[in-house]
Length: 116
Length: 113
Image 1 (cartoon, each protein chain N blue to C red):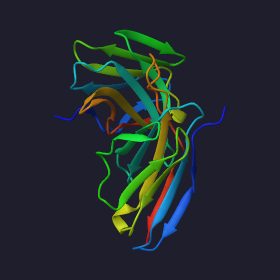
Image 2: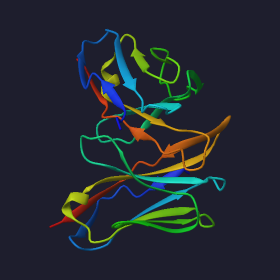
Image 3: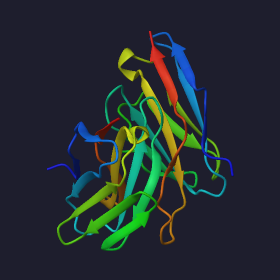
Image 4: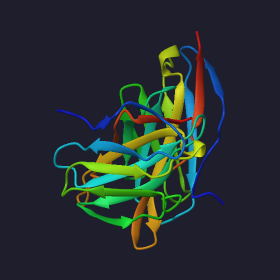
């Protein structure tokens, strides 16, 4: 079946502009996660959705970052007034929740964001 | 102490050898453990999950879990150059308000032809 998809795959933007990154989870996956990965670094958790609520926003680095999710479907991560330190790959993952063995996260291909 | 710790490597093994990747975690209540492989420039790919003490085998991969000692390992038998990647350990652990999957920083594996 279809995996997690993300768009755009690459985004180059000027410092100070706003960007929107999109994630389409695997159909039926109730949980959705956003991570950031800077070059050569590990995964940095940003936010987690269960359905369309976000019980854990603890990883959002500043109030310039926000995310929303429509039902158990598409999620959008918005970065306002982008800064050069926002340059990274933004990864989305989805998973089932609530039953044994269902916490496995499946990742999308990521969006590479470059802020010039 | 980090919640999930891995040796950053690089771990270098010759082709055909067994590669052993280790991970320790701090939360004794953790119940779910995962290994991901990440090739350079690609996103993480789930290799295996393990939930019970002991070994779990899938092809050339074996995950080993020891909850008493709080470690989980991944063995790769008959290592191939195509196994060269960063391997991420992930642990579902307690967090404020519930549980959360915590990723280690990863171990870089290099398999020499």
